[in-house]
Length: 76
Image 1 (spheres, rainbow, N blue to C red):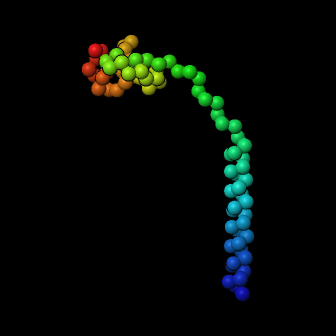
Image 2 (tube, rainbow, N blue to C red):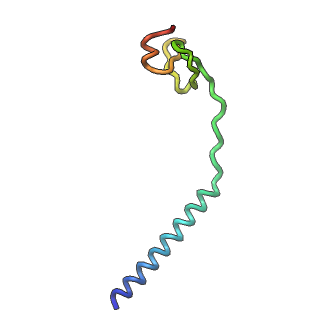
Image 3 (cartoon, rainbow, N blue to C red):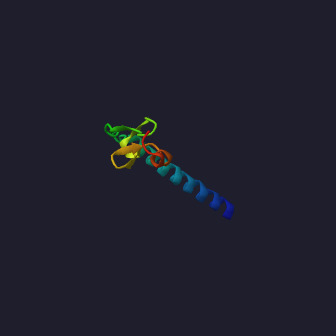
């Protein structure tokens, strides 16, 4: 008898857990995606000329570099 009660409690708990999980995924699906970021300024590496976003550029004075090695080597 106690196993039957335990089984019923487990089934009810799993049912509640699944219904809450489904609600969470529905809410996430209804949320609009965040708008994409605006345009970014693009800079050329002073050493090799590779174009990189300003947010990722390593600046040294007014020169932009794509990696620490090129920043160390300086402009070409």
